[in-house]
Length: 278
Image 1 (cartoon, rainbow, N blue to C red):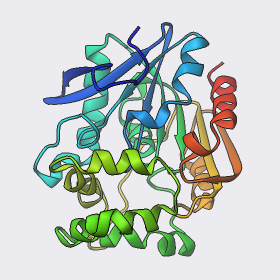
Image 2 (cartoon, one colour; image 1 turned 60 degrees about the vertical axis):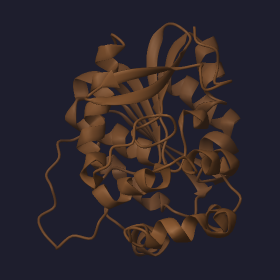
Image 3 (cartoon, rainbow, N blue to C red; image 1 turned 180 degrees about the vertical axis):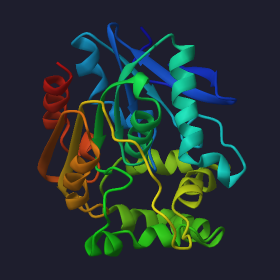
């Protein structure tokens, strides 16, 4: 078992889907793949990993492409979610995992949803934290909360604003929540900030109105989790995700926790995960 996230040498670099991904593994048993979001890395899960590993799970935590210690492709389109699903299935192939429980937060939840939709054979159960199903109808409140996604589209301007004056914008935007010091350390690496914003540019750029894409329903048992202190996502959309899940569905709400549920409510999240996975 690899030591738990104590130094950059604890994990390994794995080539999957034509990209180098930093990955850590902990424990032995039934595999669970845990996917972080913006602006985080595998370190987001540090309160969940030891608990799950101690309960007989093989916990796999990668840095997603463009984040942390993983490779940063140069083209915006490289960060399209379908490419990232390829990373996930390629990583599972390299690790000899036919199917895993998949849990994701923020962008990691978006990847988890799409993996369950596109590759249902690889997902035993799905746990989506904060981010709803991609077709969950938007609300007026969600449009108001998601203003920053438009700001992130402005290449160069967004980067300069975010890192100006010792990352003052990011400190304001995060409201002191999340793993801010670690995020700043990661985003300060050459090219890292642009790589992280390219997730928004590849997947959320404004588009002309058109037909809503048809997606098959999620057949994996699905747990949706939202926290009442989330300033970026409306919980009504997570509740509405039930419409797109054909398998067993469960919704849980965590009072008071910020967007960063794995850090703000680790005990509650660990209890939910252990109950759900069992």
